[in-house]
Length: 471
Image (cartoon, rainbow, N blue to C red):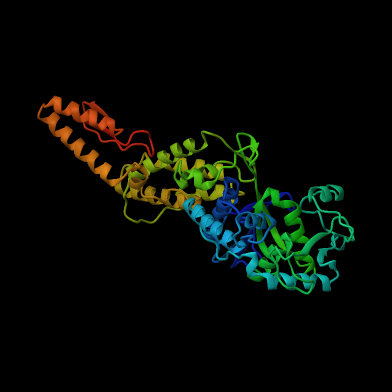
């Protein structure tokens, strides 16, 4: 099968072939760590995690880097507000990001570089751009001279006036051209700063990623990813400085961008009070349900989050885990390749996530029809493997359906259910009714049917157990 991806630079779906057939290099812009991750931060982490999993399936080696921006005006503002050093703030939110992404099943990249650990590399890259006449120093600032790179604007497709307005750049009197952007800027005594040939200062936003890419992945990479909001100016500026620093060598061969997350059709913002933090959503649903929801739309299109999004995702996963529960546990077995062809084909077709999920449900539907132990084992393994490619279905089905609650309460419920069953078998209906009322007080619904059947509840339903006893 051929792997294709939409390249933002060429605006076409292209066959993906890495420069080195033995090793794929991928860099994704990570979060600025001044607060907890919201669902918009989580979308690129999850989308590119699936791409990372797919690459690992197809290629012998994948080097994946996702950075942390740990020096930034927003971080500086948080430090002033709290009186804490920026390192305390950034370490806190890096740890929180790791926890939240782990809960969503996001794998850890090979490299997670932080800007503050790469100041020397940034200074070196800025110095080279100056030496090559692509940048200049004035009043303690170093700026990239945009007219020195003729292909500037190819990624975003913007006209010059649009680019200047869209970048929200300060048209300062010391700029040679209004579009020139900052590579290094001076720091006052109350701001973080490092010594440099241009005085004490700190890096501009765009130079950081180029320096970290060069350090960990080389001068040219296969994949650069991030949200659509980064296309301009961030990624446009990265191309300019990264290309010019290496004598015109291609900075990145494939640019891949995910769409925005909106909430009830509106952009997330503090002013609207609709910013959804991952850690808050994790109190409402398991991480796999959040991940499932994030994978429900085409990765390049907007994803609108509404009140029913999580509930729908949980119901879908309940169906899939229900099939796994009915099939297994099963012994390890070799998976027939044709069982995975559908989901692999969907993922290799420009990471078609909705189709991949549809294929997962088709596989589960077929699994319901199998009758032999051998076929059950094969479909169980295939569902697990198909789920692994998406980062889903990795829990034990019994654990997935196990209701939340403390062990003492569960033991009490089990004792009461057993006592009620005994009372009914002895035709002591008064005692059985009393125990039934006790169970109801604990949130347990008891239904007496003509056949014995124990049904495990849907995860996180209002009731703790559904108990069916012999009538």
